[in-house]
Amino acid sequence: MSATVNALLREDLRDFGGYKSARSEALSGSIWLNANESAWANPGDADGRLRRYPQPQPEVLCARLAALYGVAPAQLLVGRGSDEGIDLLLRAFCMPGRGAIVIAPPVFGMYAVCARLHGARIIDVPLRDGEAGLRANLPAMGDAALDGNASLLFLCSPGNPSGELLELDAIAQLAQRLRGRCLIIVDEAYLEYADAASAISLLADHDNIAVLRTLSKAHALAAARVGCVLGNPQLIAALRRVQAPYPLPQPVVDAALAALTPRALVLTRSRMEAVHEARARLLDGLRALPGVRRVYPSAGNFLLARFTDADAAFAALLAAGVVVRDMRAMAQLGDALRITVGSMEECRRVLAALEVARTEAAA
Ligand SMILES: *Cc1c(COP(=O)(O)O)cnc(C)c1O
Image 1 (tube, rainbow, N blue to C red):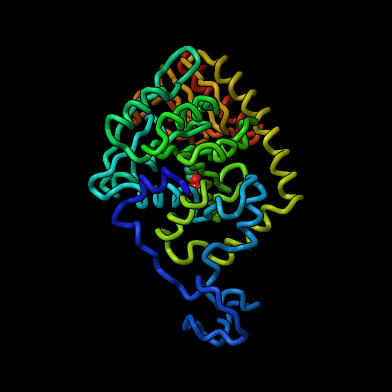
Image 2 (cartoon, rainbow, N blue to C red; image 1 turned 90 degrees about the horizontal axis):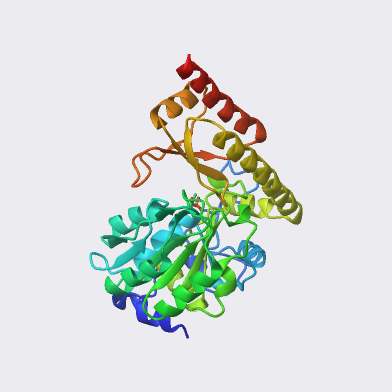
């Protein structure tokens, strides 16, 4: 049994079974008349794949994802992107209007958005900007979780937008300290780019860790909306009761399976090397530009850069048709842009646009 799930699951949801869909009952037969589906396929649905409700947790896809991440299927919940995972965790573990979460801004915005919509308090423990880059202060986050009675603590590794890769030892220590008190979510949306071990390896020893993975980034399937929560089976079972009945449309399941064949996985892995090369090239190029104050090291497929005139840099890139992420509204990032590492050619275009802006300013 998971002590943490027992301690932290919302008290008012302990005996809540969730919606029992026709598809969730383990029945067998040859004539299916239990879900009020049509007896005929839609004329636009040529092979009749869409006539029936899909499986709530598509078995074949779950098995494939479990193998990919090295867990048992019972340790995995698949949903509409990791964004849905974040929302489900909030719903299951934070009392509306009373719960609290700990985050380390500047960080991916969805943790705060879901908390806000759910009426959960957000406890900020800002990243510290030092020699090594923008770094999360895990001991301080732990203090804040205990002081504020937070039930969820979000880590992002590699960090978006910091690029920081967290040490698994540090995550394990924090988990040990917060055991039974707070659930640590490790968002690994960019882990494939990092060439580092996953926090999934910590699940066996820490029942208060959950990991988020997605097919949106390295697997190039953002439009399909497929993401996973990985954790102990009690945690996953609790989230399933909170999730909507049929989170994944059948065409999405088919697309995800096609994206996870052995051949597709080999190609995806080889693309990571291309990103590493382009990232190094973009990093060097940006650092050589005089208008660039600082570029942070990054384990993801993006670089965070500070500019002496971020306004001008953003405008110059736009004028060249290059759209990057404006970070200037974020705490600590008033002079920063986040640039996705695209193809080598796209990186060249970024550098060329900034180079032109510099020569024009000098003229
Ligand atoms: C892009 C991103 C996600 C979103 O993932 P989806 O699976 O597309 O919902 C989650 N976390 C971080 C840190 C991201 O940058």
